[in-house]
Length: 187
Image 1 (cartoon, one colour):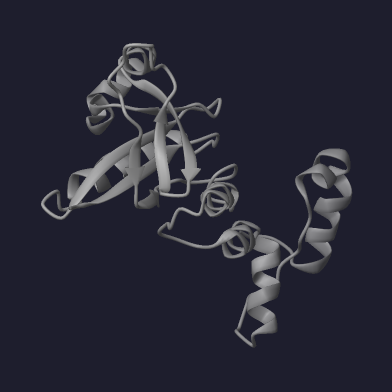
Image 2: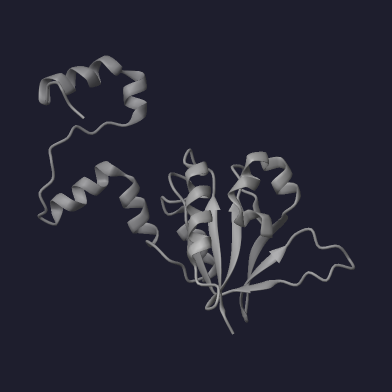
């Protein structure tokens, strides 16, 4: 029996479209003689879909049409494993839940790559490829990541750290701090 890999992509991120392109390429590259591949597209509003048309990039040009041809799903954990569950099953539907053995998140950006999706998969008890929650969260926060690298004794360039809110609320102070501490030009 083949391992069933659920490839998660899309999600609530500004890098949503990049995730789609990456996932379609990855799904094409997975050896189908060894693995069954189930696409799991997560829309920008967090709804999960699956369907054969998700394998082809040209279908994403008309997203409403594509999603109308796909099925809404969720995941459930039972004593027998983790299953993809079809939400639109009618009373006479022959759709059965599909066991999933491994998740392959191909996601980019906040609200998915930052540990959010890892947390969901860990909650389900579904093995997955990639960073755990903490590693993903630290990796997404560049200021925290630099501190972790420094504490490990690795050489890291100096920087000035500030949050977007501080910049929005007091741009002038942030710019003056940058001028004072580093000067221009800068990256």
